[in-house]
Amino acid sequence: MKELSLFTGAGGGVLGSKLLGWTTIGYVEYEKYCQKILKQRIADGILDAAPIFGDIRKFISEGYAEAYKDMVDVISAGFPCQPFSVAGKGLGEDDPRNMWPATIECIRIIRPRYCLLENVPGLLIHDYIKRIFGDLAESGYDVRWTCLSAAACGAPHLRNRLWIVATLADAETLADPSLRRCGEQEEGQNQLQGRAKTERPGAALADADGNREKRNQSQNRQGSGSKQSGWWRFEPDVGRVAHGVAARMDRLKALGNGQVPQVVKTAWELLK
Image 1: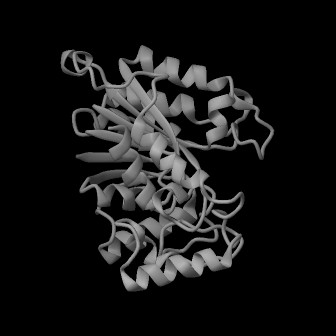
Image 2: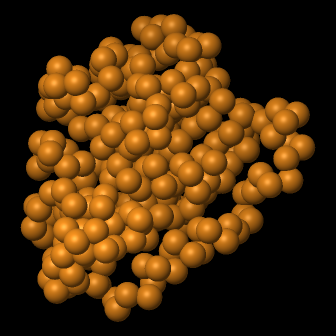
Image 3: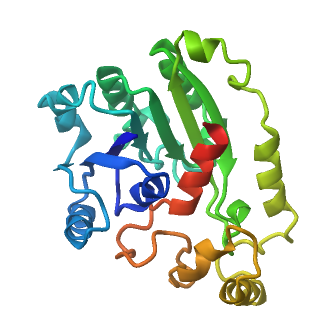
């Protein structure tokens, strides 16, 4: 799978796609600080060597998106969440930081077979979700989604996110009865989310239950946890700010759009 990464941030999402065996052939990231991190991680050999572009609007207007036609299998995009976050003003399309129009324009130009999109769960109760699902449907994509947290994947912290996989419809996918359409439920999704719900309220939050975190760390060292427990052995310790962003990378200026690599992989496998 060849991936074009939009809104790459400091690279947590593309570390997730590396767990899936994908190759990144382009990064689009506006923040200069995050661009510096990506360049360094490419130099380190951690991330795939590929061009790094800035403003997604210039990426489109200057013809770079067009140049990626017939080259991309999947577009990944954690498009800015501030217009939809419950912590913000919820301005949606009236927020100048709303980059969904640019995101769907890229998708329509490049026409990848798949899109992997990420945002805050609050987007599901915002009116703008109708616009997003409508745009994808009009562009020929079938959509599946779930809210999946790091805690549901065995991490000692929450970081809940909305994940959307859009698949370009054709005769094969339309004839596949296993393809869940919008609104249907997935048993595996409920199982994963149920694991997080069984904990007492607040137990999955960063530093909310020190004993629980110590137990997880002990299990990881002993190798006695779940199949996924070893993932969290190198979790970065950034205290009460956040847990779950990409380990061993500069973090403090890149936490807001940081994705947890293990959750990226799990969300894709669950929805794909």
